[in-house]
Image (cartoon, rainbow, N blue to C red; front, top):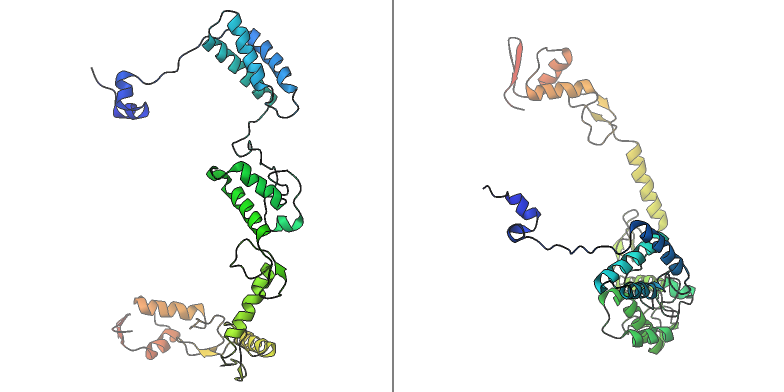
Amino acid sequence: MRSAPRRYWYKNGGWNAYRYGGERKAKIDAILSHGARKAMVDRVADLLRDWSLSHFQNEATVRHGLRQAFCLQGHGWTRADAEATYLTDTAIKQLGYRRPDWAQGQPDHARESDFCNWCHGPIDEKGRARRQRFCSPECARVALEKRGSNSDVVDGGIRNSARRLVAKAEARPKPCAFCETPFQSYDPNIRFCSNRCVRLGALEEQKRALSHRVRPCEQCGNNFTPETIQTRFCSARCQAKARYERLRLKATPVPIACTCCGVMFTPARPWAERCSPQCSAIVMRWRSGTIRRISPRVFDYMFRCEGARITGARVTFEAA
């Protein structure tokens, strides 16, 4: 007797499952017939449709009532529970109700970021700009007390937002390092009140750091104190003049001599060396040693090259 191939073992749970058999779900016979089930599902859907707080408000009550009724008819608890579960799940699917995930089922869940995660009230524009999850320190403090420190990792962002809001409310006002406006912060190391003050303060610190450094202007050559590390010109006028010179040189390139025929031409690209495709083809054939016919242009080019030797109708090159 031939054994089953290895791919069958791996596909169906390994050798133990093939030899001794895998786990099989027990088949529970239905209590109601197909037509009776369909009618019962419609009646269960009517009961579940009457809700006030949630789509699943009456699910447990209906399921327990069906199971109790089947048990009182003389059916076993397992068959009664399976039949009641099938009827309620089919009715929920028929109504199109979608079960929420773990985060959506929490009491502090808010559908949109514009509402508080505890009282579901609106968050002001300043709080939304700072991506706060609570409308006030009071809501954040109550959420921390109710949630506790043993929460799951999923709500870590909400917990951290509540802690920052509470710490900010309890912090003492201090002046901004740039505009000297009093503000509160959850982090004692923060020195600025807004992102605008952070950028302007960084520029001021950079100016003070570069105040003792003097460099020459790349356009006029005068010494000046740069505002930033990337500053290369002493004024906007020198910067515009340098840009104009750069564009003018780029638009009017200097004429050069062709390396093949020696004719002066204006290159369209900075790396161009030949004046025409014909000269480029001659240079390529000369470098590969495939010149068959000596034209006047090829003859003139050969005199400019070293190592050219003519043997009969063939041209060879000893060195470039």
